[in-house]
Image (cartoon, rainbow, N blue to C red):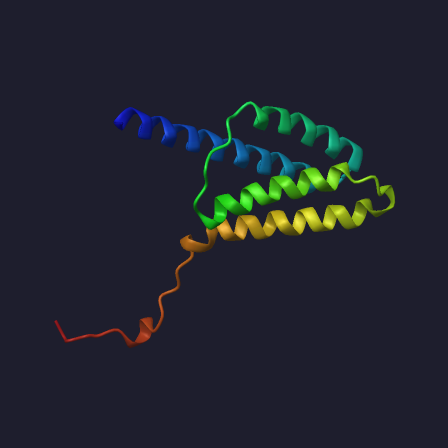
Length: 123
């Protein structure tokens, strides 16, 4: 039973890393000054092929579920045939990627509340 849990955990880590690589590929393309939607589409299709090689796993955290939803959003967006709205699609995908990054970093920015009112007993 122990091997099964370790294997499950390893599989989940591989899947999360693959999702994050997909996200980073998207972000790199979206933040490019010379953004071209057709080049973006080709890059995403290539990244998605790599993602498909990894077996999907159950995800529990808010961040990882948001990662999965972002992949689905990107795939829906690039497969839409509405060619006139590429600038709107670009803005939407960039906004969602930034929100995803914010969600990932949410726990690492803790502010000390009332730090000026800390207890000082004189020693």
